[in-house]
Image (spheres, rainbow, N blue to C red):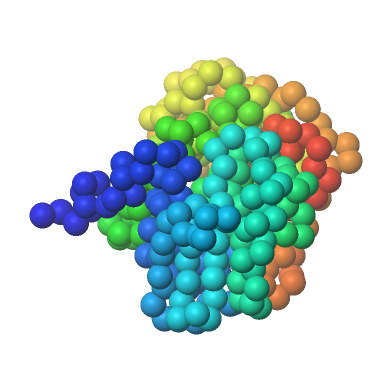
Length: 308
């Protein structure tokens, strides 16, 4: 029997309430990932001992019943409250949940579809949007080199599909994909296209921006659908200025297959969005290694990459 068959995981269909279903799915992932993953989700808080983690759903005393609860030998309690509608924080419920935070290693996590942290949660809870939790899980898999055949990879992949199906992730019309731009930005500005490795996996997005030279300066609209298996000569034609000028990309072999995005520049940020991303030693580092995502609202209002 294939252990990765969906019927062997009671994370999607066991609970009728959508909040319970999505919380149970995340709890399975957190239990599977254990202490390193949970600390990663908490934002680096090193509060968990490396021992057996207990997971419960709908655990409470009647006055306050969070959607999820993780604990470990009475050394910590992490309570999770999930919301699937924006602007739906219940103040009374929040205050009752906060009463459960009694020890140094206790935490309350709120998950909502809001683009910005609800003001009611300031200083009271660790907050993530469903978009952020999806991105965090993807980043964790990549940083720790999880194989696509691993159980954790499978669970995260199915969880992200669940979020998509429940319409908890940002809509395509608002999604901005950000890629490294050391080469691509100049091409996009001169010739209105972006190309990359063939069959690269992206979330469907309406906009594209480049992180380049420690800033984000230009925003492009993606025109039409990306196309794979493209050689540049076939789509741009040999008399295109790109080829006439003998552009450096030609040296890489224009007949090699690429994924091709047609673009239209729609905005220049002034001032630019400065990169203030740092590594664990406080040294500034690249904002994006492959790609990341944000929303049109966030990138329009951002001053620093931390705002994204």
